[in-house]
Image (tube, rainbow, N blue to C red; front, top):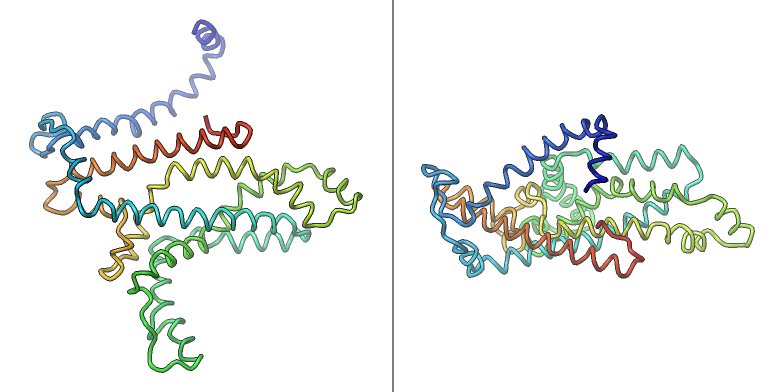
Length: 306
């Protein structure tokens, strides 16, 4: 502690730069956390956050005994793991493929084309999906008829089982290029002399990728896995909500959409219940993050966030 104070005194000018960032985090990140106490209260707008009566774990127990509990938890975990299992390997493979391209102009063109979908808003993306998969006017219906189908095909958007696939693979199309940025940056640290030495020894392109490039990506992949593990229970709200309809609700109702519906329904009288669900979600995310971080530290030579 003494050394810390001595360092602060010597470099007080540098610590001044931290003041705005620390103040911003305290005001906009930590101060609002005081409001989470309504998860343990029967919140009423008239009494306010501090004046509402304490009820303990009443709202948590209500959620645990709700028929929606298992459904929203399973749907959330299903979408998260599905996306993680698809996107992580594809991002690694794509970054290795882009890194192997010799022609710089072609390489930049591929990167630009794959990055562009990331900047499409979620609303526009869901609109594109809706238009393309329209069985009457969309590309899907047109291709079906060109292949000899009679009448119109089934509406995929109303098929319950199709929702997870549409959600995950549309996200893959939109963000795959963007996800490769960090892996390509990691590959830029590979010493070119290693590749030259391997070429002299007669290693093929695939062998160099396997024994030089791929091991370089593993620490970065471990860190990304730990980061993603911390948000496994946080499936994006906007896209799921926009793609939801009454026919796919059995697989599309996730925690974020359920919290929104609970919090905004019943005339705003279930804020405490919605807060309890959100707090439970955050606690589970935190536990998963700690466990995966510890697991990563053990199996990957100490690669972890903390």
